[in-house]
Length: 292
Image (cartoon, rainbow, N blue to C red):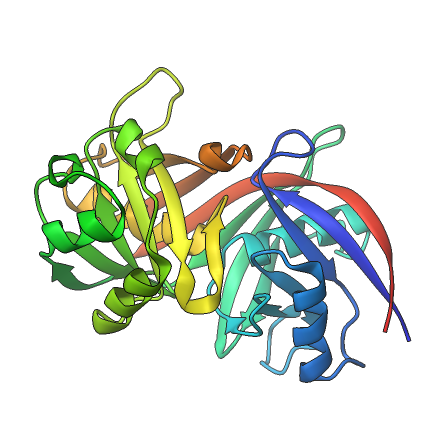
């Protein structure tokens, strides 16, 4: 069987930046075992497959897997890359800008802005924010991240979800974010104990790049050492910053992620009470055929 695939740089304005996503657009003939094997072959943080929707009103259904074979939910770069490809492939009706995507059991709205000569901008609605628990374990978190205790910011870490629960860990300054070297096994155990999937370390140190936060994402629970751009973590962080008054209440939050990996990414989130919307752009940079 020949399987067509595309490679999308998500949250990127130029090629070879952002978060790379392998996308298989016509995957209904593939078994779940084959989907997992293909994700392992590509060996990116996630690989997304487009399959026929099973939810009424959904335009497309997305299934995403990590190289470890874990199927992930949430609307992050896994979904945004799919819609960037859809917008540029001629698959979407030209007279529509609003669509609905099915991910797991959820069906959520997606907006696609297509302007001639520019990459499409995709805006995705995430689930309403849930602030699940505070985690006041400064010394343990610093040890797990190989940081000095004084590099942790005051106040507890927080588990927040806008579809997927992640642990938000505030640090003092961007240099502390760059210095983090997580012990994957200990971090996975801590995340399991607080019922979180991944760990988003961040700083709100201001610089002249227009970012409200500077972040890195580690997710050993699903086999991701580090992800260069994580929409399912950016939404919770933006909601937390607005809730705590660390961002102006207009709800426009910009997060820089991936700089430490040489894949700088800009994630934009709008927070309006319980409405969380993630926006970004990207480019299709490669395509090919996988012989299965």
